Length: 236
Image (cartoon, rainbow, N blue to C red; front, side):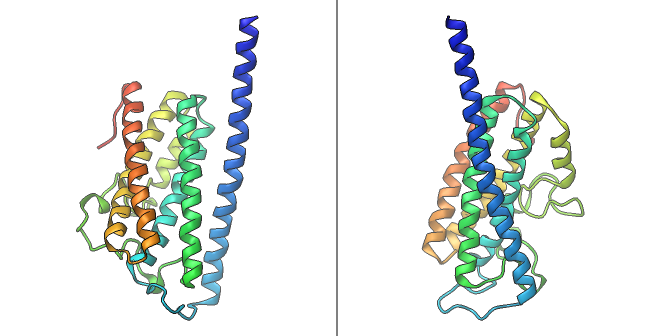
């Protein structure tokens, strides 16, 4: 009787997890499509008149909102990749939490840009991270395999080849690589958020940035422990 109950309970947990992931996927995809539509609109319509009291297009507030929205989008993408590459509930739970949190934060950042009537892409071909002084934040301009033609545009972001590799791995190998990639990603995100917390002028955005620092630092500790449990460690 106990074995039957345990089996039923396990099935219910898996069903609940699938429902949570489906709900998270719907939210994340809606935000991603909304962001893509907004970018397309901005490109077609050109620069809009500046809203009174809004940050300047080249301000830290606008730059952080644009860049962190892109940064968060990749975290959501990586989380959904690993969901299909492992059955480990701890990794899947972490991935779900990251996807849900960062999709919601991305929606806030894009919403502020809409409110300020600022474009979702950097004006005048401005490079990502131009709002941060070059080299001033150390690891903020580092990150494993960042930059160049392989797609790593910002601190800690994974390259296209790394994302493709993650999609080919299974089981513990996928778990370890995801945790390593997300550790790099969080380190870069923390550096960006710390810069906004000290440089952004909009108080609500500063508060969000400080919350990102606290949340991602906590997850960095968790991921370090999860890697150790698998006989691995962060890449740098």
